Length: 287
Image (cartoon, rainbow, N blue to C red):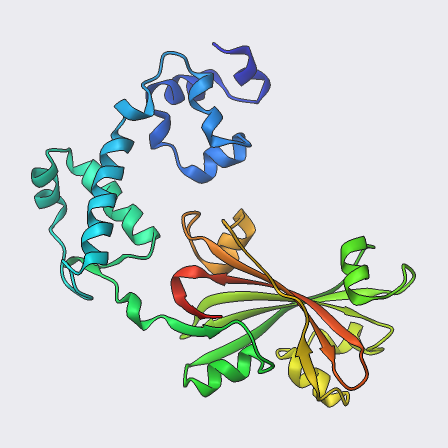
């Protein structure tokens, strides 16, 4: 029994189960125990390698269907083979076929209808997102005709952060608040926006920040009407546990992370630093 595993808090039964089939364990549970999932096999010298595991068979099926969907073999809303048919086709157990379909659904390629099977998701119906310009996200969604909602989920003061304070061009003694808004289309969470705002510029932000659903509307109510974006940094990240719960997505869905500033052209004031997470499976991007 590996001493390292005991120190990490695993009981003997857990260690035995992991040695038998670690790939069957829920990813969230493994992530809570290990910083790097690639280290999992090294802890168990007697376990099967990944190449010998059912995961390689699942990946083979997933890769095949992704290729077929992208190349047009399957059209949007086409019904896919049943789990039994897939198991026969690939000569694998039905459980392996089921895991492949689960993975495809988590990746946003298919959807299921209870009692009817699995179908190809129409990825052409994704929301067009313009990543530049001076129009608010809320206004963009409303102009496109979506059933859109912006929900304020917090307004709280943050401790001193050098990067944020430098971006806002303020001193260390100034209080900064972060305002979080969850964006929903058809009641589905699609994006999470956080704005960092200095109290020295907006004296009522501690109180008003709890009610803000559109920062652009708030700025305009304060007389800042000539808004422009500062340098934008674009990156891709996989969601943390909290982000998965907030955006209702799996760990396999990458998030598009946008960091940008907003300033008033007329006064030169930096109004905010914004960090936004977009679910990549819900958008097409116009840069």
